[in-house]
Structures are given as structure tokens and as C-alpha cells.
Amino acid sequence: MTSRSAEASHSRPNPVRPNQPPDLGTHVTDRYKQQSIQRDADLRSSTPRVFPSSGWDNIDPSCLIEEENIPTYKPERFYPAHIGEILNRRYQIVGKLGYGSSATVWLCRDIWGDCFITLKIYAALTSPTREIEVYKHLSTIQSDHAGQSCLRPLTDIFHTRNPDGHKMHTCLVHPPLGISLDQCHDLQPNNMLLGTKDNSILSNFEQAEFDAPIPRKTLEDRTIYITRPLPISLGTPVLCDLGEARVGIDQQRGDIMPDVYRAPEVILDMTWDYKVDIWNVGMVIWDLMERHHLFKARNPDRRLDDGVHLAEMHALLGCPPREFLSRSEKSLQFWDANGQWKGAAPFPDYNLETREEKLHGDEKSDFLRFLRRALCWLPEKRATAKELLFDPWMMHGLRLKKPAEGNR
Image (cartoon, rainbow, N blue to C red; front, side):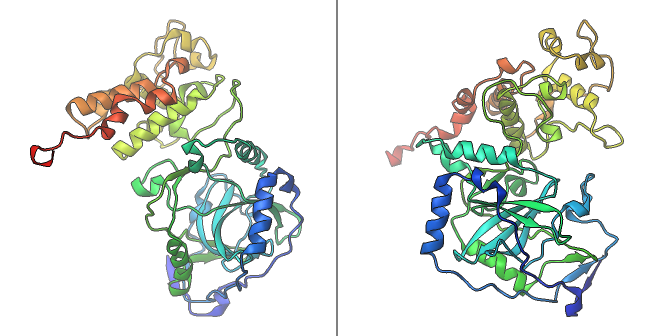
């Protein structure tokens, strides 16, 4: 699958490519603009580094890796970034942090500010306007709430031109973070990262590209890099990747959420509101506790299947209320007018009690009660975030143990 590179001809140069003025700059708040200007004035610039031109494992071009495995992947839409390349005349790419269906993510050194940043390069024809509006909204909120530190800010926006001379790519700049929770536990969520207060983690990440260049696949028009893993960092979880976030409390429509995390109202094409986030809390807590997803949502051919997904929900949560089913015409594909399951998929042979295998006694009972407060068919029956926060199961870990006699 791989072969050791020994010739400079196996690598590509790291050009500084021209960039178009940032059309979306008006979306960045004045506060961020002022911070950026002040930072540029105060911090010394650094010299771009010259990265190795050989010494990595070359991956067989016939093997699909990284973003190439995404079913909707179209290479011509993705920006062909290169390690060592400088974008917007200031951000030098030092390594790949990850990828998604619409973007790749890179750790960069800001050579104007001599610091590290995270750069998200969107695919051509992908507009993160909604995400930018959410960041703009969040930046206007004046609050001393502790949760502010758990939201990742947007610090810069610019456009860069594709080497083909035609397509443009939107780029978002954020402060760097550490690993995601799924890397801690090999599961979702990917949009919760751990903060990092130790910049040596980022410096070591950069230096690793000199000591042991990351494997890559070199094609005629681009290089596909393997994502370099970050070490575990001891920081506060930070919410990021707000591309599917919504502003407001009005009823919303549309498919959101990763497939196995979808709330039933989303699967059944109903309107939805913030209570889908409460459903997500239950799903994430289950994953973190159990180290696997609560629902598989896949048929025997391993394809996403709404019938299988709803059958699993039926088995774990019980029969959905007819009041809930009446809100969706799509529900008639799976239940009859009397609320009886039509058999689109068989019910799995388990329930919530037997599905949970790690806890015992009162702790198990408290945990399952917590889950049932979040995972309700009727959105309005789900607990609020505050109610879940002060749930006995959540508060249990904060209770102080009775001190021993000799320690009083």
C-alpha cells in the first residue's frame, strides 16, 4: 500500500498562491477585526519554514484514503492544499487536522502573528454563510456565562482561488484546539474538541512533519495527506463546527444531525426546534458511557435505513404516541392509522435495560432514568438543559463522600 519516498520529484512545491479580497469580511464583527489588527501590530512576524521535499511513505494511488472515502466526494471541488503552502499571505500550512464532506481542516502557523491557527478550507460551490451568521450572532452576545468559554470564535475569513484559476474557496480561521471527544472514545461527537493550553502540543505537531513526514498520496493535480493525530490535551470541551446551527426559537425544517443521532421528528420530516439538541445530549451521553452508538440505523446491506432506525427506537422507547405520529404523513410508511407497526423492519430483541451493560444497581437505574428524560418521542416532553444538568444522575458525581473518622 505504501512505498518509501526517496526523491524530491515525489513532492510538489509549496507556492504562495494569489488570493481574492475577502468578500465575506463584512460578516466578521468589528470586535474581531480590531483584535486582528491589534494582534498584527503587536506580535512579531515569523519566517516561513521550508518543509521536507522527501522522506515520507507514498500511498498507492489506487487506494482511497481520507476524504476520498466520502460517498459524495468530488476532487475538483476540494482545494488541493499542500503542507508548506502560504494562504492569504500569512497562514502557512503545517499539517492536516481532518476533513469532512465539504471541507478540509489544517493546522497553520500565522507568520504575521507567530502563533498557530486552525484553517478550514471549504469546497468550491459550498457557502458557509449560515455558519458565519451564527458566529456573528454569538459574538454580539454580552454575557459572563461560563459557557462562553465553550464556544469556539471565528477570527478571520478570506477567499482563496483554486489553481484552476476559476473556482473560489471560502476559508475560516479559528483558534487551534486539541483532539475531539470521538478520538478519546472512538465515537461521536466530532464537533466537540478539547481545548489546549499547552502550545508545545502544536509546536511538536509541526516539528513532527520534519522528523517523520506524514504519508500521502501524490496525484497529478493534488496531494491527499493522511491526518496527523494530536496527543490528548487536558482542556475544556469546546463546541465547534456550527454549519448546521440555527439562530432563533422558531420551528425549523430540514434534515440535520449525523445519521445515527437524528431525532425522530427529523427522520419523519416534521418541524423541529431546540429540543433536537436535548435528544442529542442523550445520544452523546450514551456514547461516552457505553463506547458505542445506541442506534445502528443500518440494514443488512449496511445502508442507512429509516425503517431500521425507527424500529430500534420503538424497541428501546416503546410505542410512539399517536399524537406524535399524527404530525407526520411520512409516519404512515411505518405505522398504520392505529399506531401499529407495519413491519418495515423487525424489532431488535432488546430493550433499554438489556442494551445497557456497563452499570449496575441504582447507578444503572439513575442513568436510564436520565436517558428517558432526554429521549422522548414527543419533543415537548423532553427535559430542558437545566433540568438535565441538575438531574440526580448528573449531580451524583459532585456529591462529597462522608469523610472517614480519622480525617474529621
